Every structure is written in structure tokens, then in C-alpha cells.
Image (cartoon, rainbow, N blue to C red; front, side, top):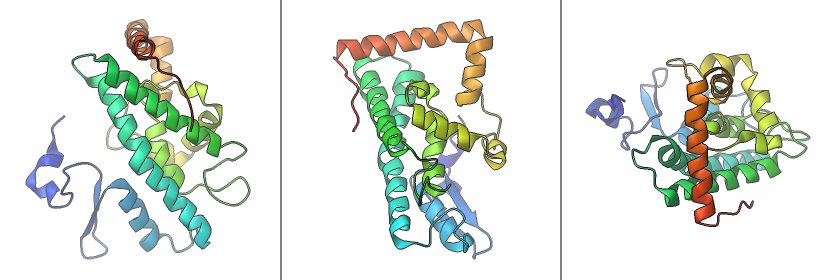
Length: 220
């Protein structure tokens, strides 16, 4: 963790000092920060054929709603689950069950939306769009945040479908190869005994925290 994103040159691009941010060198070095804004910007300027967006106004609105849902719900909640379940130096039961539980609730909502659909938005079974891209980037780290993806069958199938895309496979290891996104996590769980033991301990702590505070899953 070098915290390069806190350096002055980066905060000029992203006042929040957080990743992501981009600079468009083809448009006078115009900079954009926040994932939802970046997705909207890229489709507005570089997706004239609507390969990742929609020309239909209603579908475009639905797409924007699900990007907003990720940006205001799934991202923040799973981000806190990452911290309290995985990264915090002190294991505190209440926030652990609170944020893991809320992440599970949001996965439940996603699971409902994906019933009888291949993708979140679009006619019929839907089409791959920025709505899927926005949520996939978090769902791809479900296990890391203490969420058992296998419990959400529609989400799991959707995740596998997107994960198998060649461009996605190329992109998930940029800028460096990951070790704990879902496919690598499951692989490590099967092959590394020490890793499995440590994960079992974390899961036990989260389960005990849920029991302590009488957590009950529900969605929505």
C-alpha cells in the first residue's frame, strides 16, 4: 500500500484521493474520477454503437439505475466488509456482521434481478453492459469479503459468464496479478492447507458475530 493516490498530482485528478481516475489524452487531457462517472464518460464518448450501453432511453435509464445501485450500495458496503472481515487489525463482531450481512443482502437483490436473465439490463435475457461491468468488479471479490458466492446461484452463473470473457480475463490482472479474486481464491482454498485453515477461522468469527447479534438474511 504505497498510497500514491494521496499524492498531490493524483488528487488534482481525483479530489477524493481514491482509485479509479482516468485522463483522456484524446480529449485535451480531460480527467474523470469515480467509477460510475468513468463508465458514463467512456460510453458517452467512445461507444457510438452502444455495445456497452443502450440507445433505448428506458433501457439506458435502467442501466444508470443499476450503476448507481452499485456505486451507492454494493461498493460501499462490500468495501467495509473487506475491511472488517479481512483487513482490520482488531476483529470487532458488530461491524463484521453488519457489513458482511448487508453485502449478502445486496447479493440477494442482484440474485433476484438475474433470475431468468443472462445480464442485468436489456430486452429478453439482457445484454452485457456497463451495469454488469460496475457490479462484476465487486462480485469478483465476493469470497474475499466473506460472502459465499455459491449461495447466490443466479449471481454465480452471471459471474462465471462474465469472468469467461477473454477481455475480462485479460483485465483482472492489471496492473498486477491478483491472488484473492474468486477463481484464484477457490483454487488456493483447494490447494493450500494453511490458507484454508485461516479462512475457516475468519468464517467462524463472522458466523459467531452474526449469531451474537441475531443476524438473519433477507433480501430486499
